[in-house]
Image 1 (cartoon, one colour):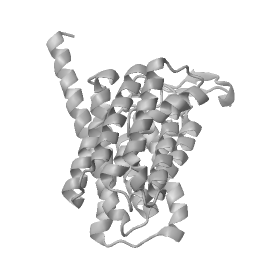
Image 2 (cartoon, one colour; image 1 turned 45 degrees about the vertical axis):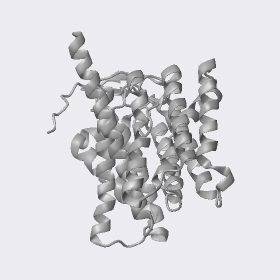
Image 3 (tube, helix red, strand yellow; image 1 turned 90 degrees about the horizontal axis):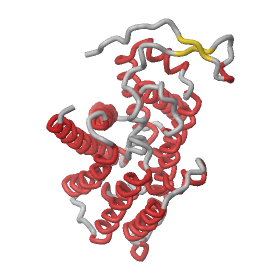
Image 4 (cartoon, one colour; image 1 turned 90 degrees about the vertical axis):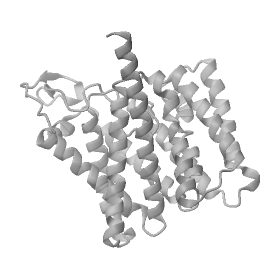
Length: 335
């Protein structure tokens, strides 16, 4: 590939990445506006249901079959359960924190990955990674403004959510190479729909048509953001895009100011800056190529659609990893 073409693709990747985080920030803004009147469970149910419908429409029965046979199915189910805890904690805290505050604390998740990878995966962190961890920790403390903190609970909930997301990033590193993006999103969101359905009888808050459509819109906007992230990592390297993942902070600050009139606190901005620097350096020096992507609900290094051929277990030997190829089928093109 010629140098000008590589530059063009890299610029496209940067643009798509930045736009993707704008959509994800908008999703958070929509849900923050809704949680003032409706339960988090109700909102997440409609959001996840829309994602499931879109995935099935794109992949049809073949996608459902592939997802059911995925070697990473159990791992993704557990990841879905952890994600539910993270989302519920995060959007519960959204009732009391500004969009800028909750997003800043959420972006500490990649910093936590360094510690979790060392503990869970026994990965050895280098000096730069530990340095970025210290910088990020200082940024979190400054952003939390402990001397002016009247109610610590929302901050604690957001940091716990960030830790849960850090665990899910670690789990994404363990997803097999054959499980496509659509399979990952389908499995995760089916877990969401099932769990939210079970919880709805105790938590449901009826919504009029405009707000009900807003819940679906949150799913649509979030889905577009996820697709843009996927497309960006198909055009540019993970290292190049690392700093632009933190444009999510800029979008959150802008939306927080435009919608709610939030005045940007100096300590919050300094903390956000340190977290952004720390996270960017941590991803450059220690990330698993394009997998520890902030806000990504799937591993963007995998293909979008399932492969044309798949593997099936021989003689019921799934647990022993004995597999044989299925008859190849063509992957349908969808408009």
